[in-house]
Length: 368
Image (cartoon, rainbow, N blue to C red):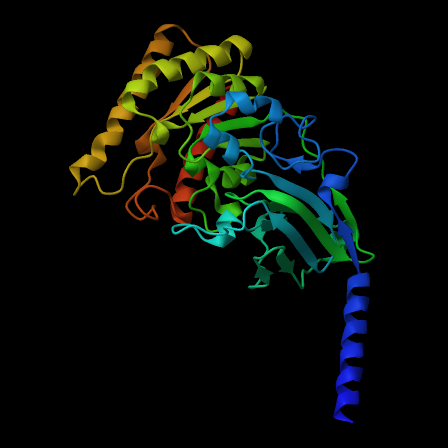
């Protein structure tokens, strides 16, 4: 009798699971007729891929840059739905989900934000309903809507992993719910070239990377070309940057530079960008500093890099170089509480960095 009960329970559970599965509508972003991925340049060449740089440019990238270009830092999916439950399933390129200084939720997870009825960005809390494995899964349950929002759907932004790639992804919503992708803007993007910090280390989740905070703050397309430890502004990499027709170029790579290489490489990059994009503003960003300079003299070495970048700025100003801007370490304002291990910002540091960059962007656009 017990065996029969167990069998009946198993059959009932199986049927319930089958019904549950049938009550979901699934969407694969890469199956859409037009590109729906935001934060990706070269869209026509990268159709069907989450990569940040097309294959034809591999020869212009260092081995490390090319590997990191497979990470989805700065990329997101934007969609509108009125579903009370949203499930995101995806396969990461690497099964190494976390680092010693960065959690899996930031390195390999996704992060969903929604616009509330006041037009404010609100993070969607998965309440520990996420798993990492051969197929990763995030469940967002019990989402609520006002009558007006229920009728038209809410806009959600799904930020992708910062330090991992995506091989496959699927978004599931309740059957019968509204669902539509919001297509990427045709506006010229803000291009950010930077280091591991720009890529997102060490945000606890993708939405807390400073580039993604800026994305929500300035409401303008962002292109994240941050490459951990590898933003050395090689001539070939400058040509890659130059291919992107951006409305603003932010060069924030001093943490990866040696002082002796800053002047020539930065000067050449600015001239190259200006030749191809005569009106586009260029923002030079200093090394954001070290937290322990008051007790460790060696920590002040970053100032040598910043001194060289200041020389670049002064040289270009003497050349009457137009639309050139500069952001100092002091203006960024990171403090001793801003870091994970003295190099990469924590979430608090990310917000400080984003505030400084966002303010500068608004000043630049206002002047234009």
